[in-house]
Length: 140
Image (tube, rainbow, N blue to C red):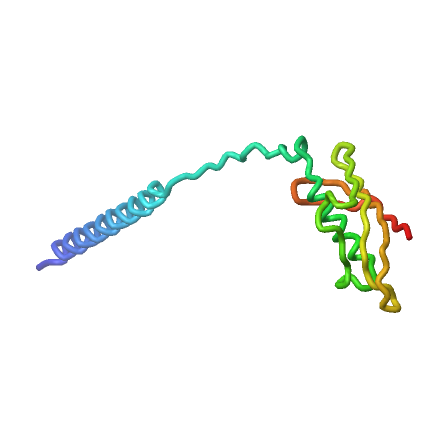
């Protein structure tokens, strides 16, 4: 073979290799884009917030959370005894989302004696299940 034939053969092989590499790259790119297209697109629309708790009111929640705030102020919170339900010697009034709970608690003082203390708690329902103490007073 003369040098011209070898040169033509070398350029031909080079062209074939380049074309093969380009086709291989295109094939790989198609596979990648097909995988991306197959992935489902999920769009979530935010639900309308539930505001039913604003109208309904929650006197039980007010009573429950008022007891929790009272326990935080007691000397011996583990000894606290409250009325069995919000209907037993308990007054609950509501103005908007602010509740006033007047009730009692029996608990031990510093000397270990059980004392009954009347309390008044103003508590606000900020959102469903979230309560904030406004004011807490104890009366002996």
